[in-house]
Image (cartoon, rainbow, N blue to C red):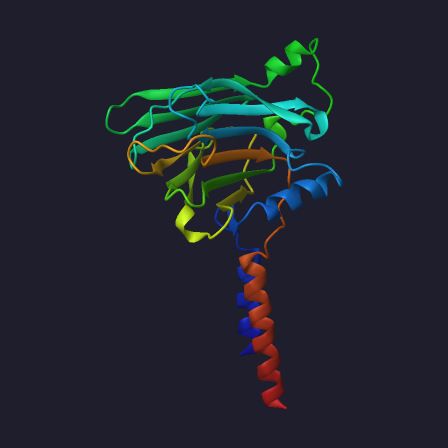
Length: 272
């Protein structure tokens, strides 16, 4: 009997796993800050970021800040970020917006929102090659290119006390070079769920070819009292491309092997 178990375990380990990305979830900014800072001890939580697609409540009129933009490093070592191609979004409470965050296979990124009722689209685009061109044809020191990314942190945040929430639903990631699509899931932040501070929720996606052409899609909903859109970044989505390498999970085959070995040990003990 235990020989059959051994054979089954060997087959399980040798059988190729289905191609899929790895998705993890966590609450609060602390883990992200620690994982970024572990890359550069004593640094800041921006040290690991290649680029960040950002969507925020702003003021809806561009008077305070842009609501849709791509952030890129201002200087190496996380000294600061600057907004590129910032746009304004005419937010409607509880309205669903189709989200698209796309990479062209080089270092170009496009972030778009499409109103599901009016079909109007707001887009922000930027190519990190422009940074090199502005630097005399070479990369600024410390610049992390999108093609060197190792993981994508998807962050939603809703500030407490404002009766607001942020929902990113039905997220999926498609490798346009291979045509394969992976379901990522959904993430939700609710200001009502925290007594102090901000409700920050994360999904982190890894085990994906970020150098390929790809697109992240889903639906975004900002929930707030009609006519009372909170200013600033009180409602916020961050799509953070980083060079943080995520821990490698134990393969399914290895789990099956361990289970089979335990079973073999039990059978052998009983035979004695």
